[in-house]
Image (cartoon, rainbow, N blue to C red; front, side, top):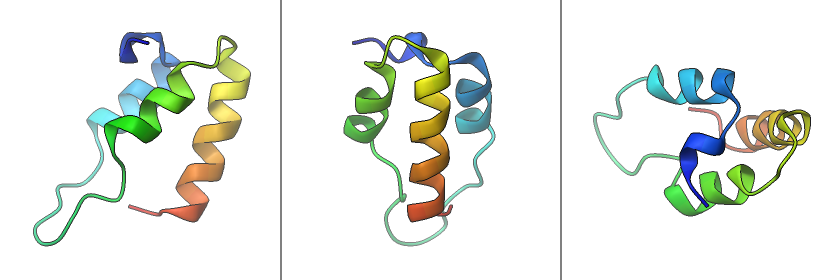
Length: 57
């Protein structure tokens, strides 16, 4: 699954996430691919909101 299949607003939010100066970034590609494989943008947005609550950046 390609990450360009993410809802545009999620892509934009990812682009503007703050830089991590130390340690690991709280999100990884595997997690994003799990969201991107959902065909409906509403479901992607719900999964993204849940993820952001669990792993705030």
